[in-house]
Amino acid sequence: MDKVLIILAIYVMLASCSTKEKDDSIASVNGKELSLSEIIDHMPDQIEDSLNFCDKFMEDWIRKELMISHAEMNLNIDLLDLNQKIEDYRGALLVYMYQQELLNQSFDTVIPQIDIKEYYENYKDEFVLRKNIFKGRFIVVDKTVPRLQDLSRWYKSEKIDEIELLEDYCLQFSKEYHFTDKRWQYFSYINNRLPNLIYNEEDFLQSTKGVWFEDESFRYYIFIRDYKIKGSSSPLGIEKDKIKEVLLNKNKIAYLKQLEDELYQNALAKKNIKIY
Image (cartoon, rainbow, N blue to C red; front, top):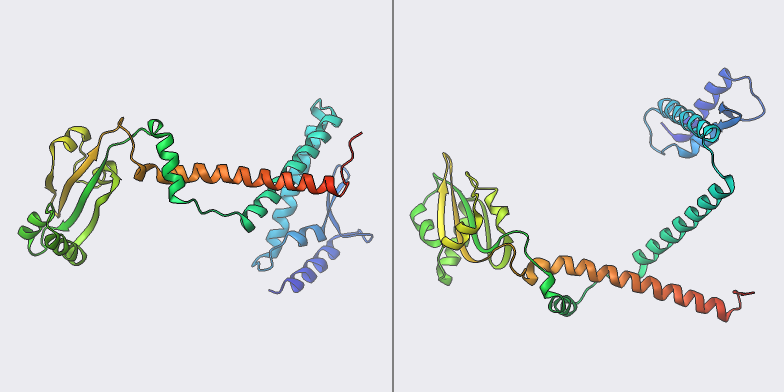
């Protein structure tokens, strides 16, 4: 229903139920009134049940005003202090919203890779692995797929031609596969996909190069090219996203500080600041 028609219908309904002619007030709590126009201002443009929306809005408003009135009567509050806190909160909220708008409009979110690497090198000792990681391959196939004997050879191969055959095979027949030969991956990500959980990941990584497991329906192939145990130094590949976030936050702070300084200097130049 068109919003204009909804509004007219509500007006007619409320007019038939109200004896007030001086305004469009439809409810009051301890002298504070709720107007129909206030409800309409909050009504979505597209709404299926406008009457239900009005009833819900009015009930929520009444409940809120009752709580506010009860709080005012029963709390021992310094009103001057409360008003100051409200004004402080309003100011802080306005500044925050303005800063977010500035960041959305003109802040450069690109962090050069050289900056990420430099930060990592400067604080390398602080990056410690909390989980085991590895480089390698993980492949899951149905036990009925063809050429399982070839797969059992290819999945741990270092030969370029056989790796290409493996990738093509996985595209055709695998249920799931992950090739992380050149990037680090948390081993727990793979461990949680195995038919039986490996409880001692450290021993497994240290003693395993290539292995496969199976359940009633699937085979799970794991090839370990390289690994690092938790507690050791965490590589840049694992920490890159965290470092980027740190640098991004530092840049945001510097950017907003620069804007604040420029605003201050412009106000001084225009003599909009007076210090007595």
